[in-house]
Image (cartoon, rainbow, N blue to C red; front, side):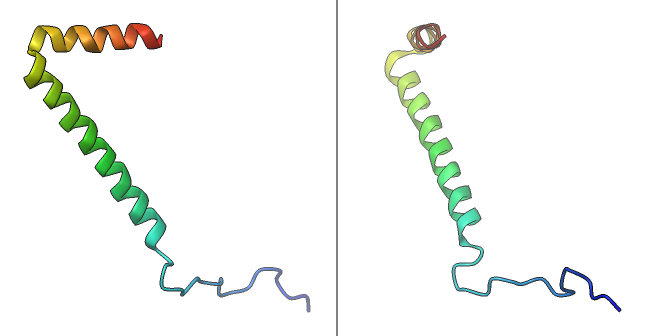
Length: 64
């Protein structure tokens, strides 16, 4: 009889760094998000509410 093309047991990566990349990417994204939030809060406290929103609005207008 013909044998199936795929094996019954898929190959697994058992190296020490096997599950590390998704975790590193998650932590890097979380750190970048935290940095953006801290930066926004620093601008808010330094310039005040009105100037903060003007800076954000002008930045969006310059991008688009």
